[in-house]
Length: 107
Image (tube, rainbow, N blue to C red; front, top):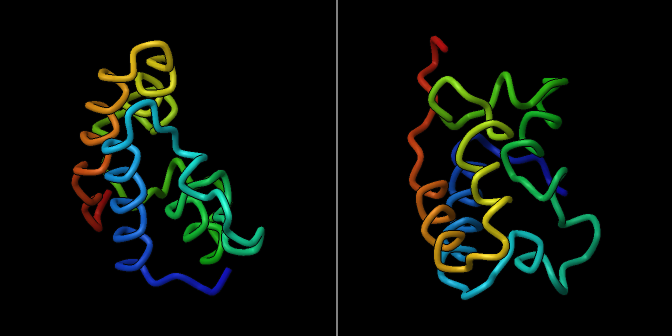
């Protein structure tokens, strides 16, 4: 995958999660169907890919998105992951994820 800029990583992250939120029963992995393997970001997340490309080892600590005191694995993402049997809830959570604010530079 070509090196992502900060704004591009955030744009792609939002585009990805908006897509998931629009698809009934959609999941984050379906978004990448048909893409070449080198076009699929690390952990199927453009923000994790950005961090890896820019030398950050642990993307949860340096994520470009503000997950509000919790990293993605303990907040909305985890709620979305556990909502697999409730597609309407999963869609709502995906849209919330897409709209999370950017992390402030000082965080």
